[in-house]
Image 1: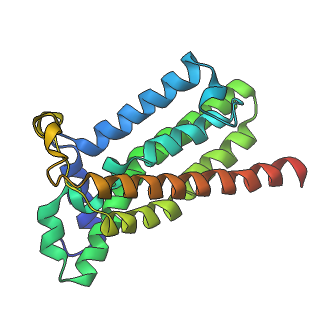
Image 2 (image 1 turned 120 degrees about the horizontal axis):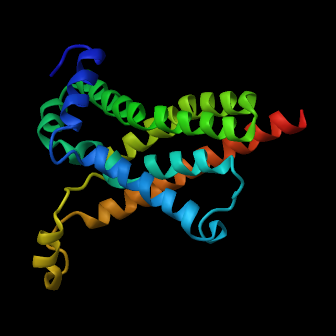
Length: 206
């Protein structure tokens, strides 16, 4: 394994964009889904905070909180197996995967926050929100990475799932994936909405 965090991040970044590019496609797909849900259907169906400033927060939450994007060991079992007996290398690999996902999402969401600020003529609030979207996800990302260690699962194609549909799953690891998904969603939405609640309270009332 790569000897430094920077080298590991570079390696993971390159690997992430190789076909089938699971993480980037998952992130882009979730961004598309939340955009459709936000702009094309009544927002109150899926979102509690439906104001203009809620979109960057919802976008970040949906882009991060997906089990396939944060299933850190199941994505790359070869590298994971190679470092399981080396605590320092395993920690470095987990950190690198966290940084790679963060680099894919944080700049996009921060840019959206700045665009909202331009539209709403409030660049101060936009800058504060952009800063929050850069910093706040690091906490839940670190926690969700370790959840991926506790509840790893193997990615299975739709063709494989269809082939074993009458055999009760065939050991595909769906149970772990469901558990991890629920826990990650709780982690991300707790962090995002709890922290941003106090973020807005501080801005508007203090």
